[in-house]
Amino acid sequence: MKKHLMIIGALLAATPAEARVVTDDGNELLEVCTRDDYFSQGYCLGYIRALSDGVDMVLYTGNQKICYGDNVTIGQIRDVVIDYVKRNPAKRNKNAMVLVSWALAEAWPCQ
Image 1 (cartoon, rainbow, N blue to C red):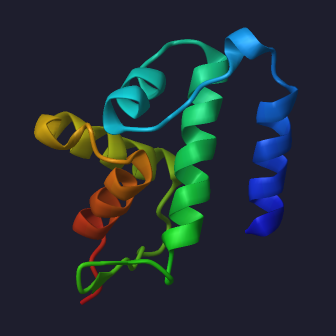
Image 2: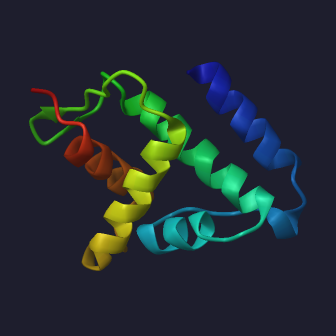
């Protein structure tokens, strides 16, 4: 996990200043993840992947642990996050990491 975050951090640090993206809240996360360019899509998937890896079996949202089923893909996780942010416009000012956590806990609660 730490290795993945270090690689992502190094890649972001190596990108030109005009290509850098800051994802502080749900509005910015939605804006970046719905852009059509490869950099933004890569950033979006990398951001969501890093957070989903971090919360997997570690992060609790409320009293629910996140339990992915077998064969869940990063594309499915991205779709769940985008759908959650779109369905919850009143929460878009919240921290993007928190929104990702809430989306994953809603989609894959432990039974």
